[in-house]
Amino acid sequence: MKYYRELVSLSAFTLDDAGKVMKNPANASQQLNAMIKAGYVTRIKHNLYTCIDLVSGGEVANHFVIASHITDNSFVAYHSAFEFYGMYNQVYTEIQVASKKRFANFETDYCRYRCFLTDSDAQVETIRGARVTSLERTIVDSIDMLGKVMDVEELVKCLALIHTVDQNKLMDILKLYDKEVLFRKTGYFLSFFQEQYRLKDSFFEFCKANADFTHRGKISSNELNKLTYIKEWALYGYKDIFALTYKGGKEDV
Image (cartoon, rainbow, N blue to C red):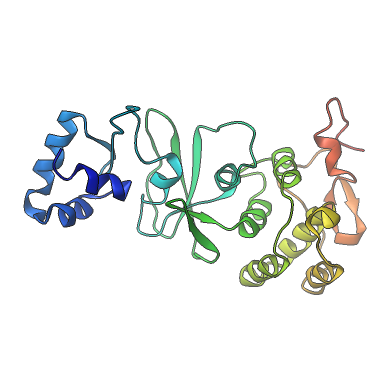
């Protein structure tokens, strides 16, 4: 039980972290192995550990906290960030993790951790011990990676559960990425939620001012059928994205 409380406070930790707690780095591996055999600690993957809750018998670190400790700069992103914020009604067995450093995808008894490389940690916040993209970055990232991290119907369902957003943070992340088609895609999707999110007309003017309307695009490379041309955004999309979530609705309405 020695060091157990200190390690619990770390939630998820590496061998180096354990060595600092034990004040004996050279002997940390041996002591960790003893704690694993005793049922106090479990190894998540190579050089990543968490303690076992002595009451529940479960892992102290949840999936989101684990994802935040896979590399020095990893964080929860895309559909997993929406799940973190409570925008999913079902629990997924895959955690989507963004990281500046590549790691091999891996599975535990409970879920699969999937790596997405990123070169930016802008708008990454630490909440309840987990590093996660802001709600605004999550929206933009998911639109940018639509078809790879989720489909249109999933995205619309998540967007519908959001009550308000920070318009300035949306603009900041769009300016950082500086992808002209992403300005159009974001403007297109959020135009359906302008009143709900309390977005000003200036936001959509901003999106259009940074777009190139001489190039036609599509909302997702995986959404090729039943799309119609939306002249306002020079995109092939849906006239009514909410129709995708209607029970028995038609996608081409």
